[in-house]
Length: 226
Image (cartoon, rainbow, N blue to C red):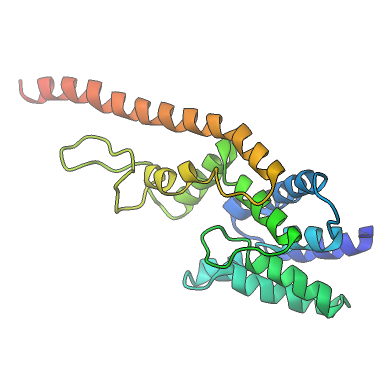
């Protein structure tokens, strides 16, 4: 891919991004991790891979406005139209479209080609480790979701069986479970590098919250009932 083509793709991507949890830096991280994975594979179509990485979240704006919309679906269609307008062949544009359409790991539409599998793994990796936690906390703040919820007895829930949304629920529902089912060997290696930091962060946060309540409530009850 020449610099001019990359620049056109990058500028189009930048014009579509407005979500701080899925911002341009997320895009660049996904791209760079994808390139790390790709060097361990053979016969990678780098034009398709780079375009797919740059454009994989361009449908986020539409999804944020209307949550029922799938950003992968609308983004794949936008990417295809843009690439055709940029004189890409229908075959290449369709390949990029398919990569974007199948990059979500909460989906029943798994990736089939090597490039789509690399994008899937790279995007999944950016939801892991402390980076993944930081991005989740940013999103929680955007939609005004709390860190945690209380159980009926007033103790802190770790999120395991929560119905109401919170960071702890998202960790137990998603972040704790994303370290399996990779398509590439290198993707799995990178994921495992990040796992321990996420576990430590969550366990420390949970402990600090629980201790705040346990110690403080004991003193609170003594004072209030004087």
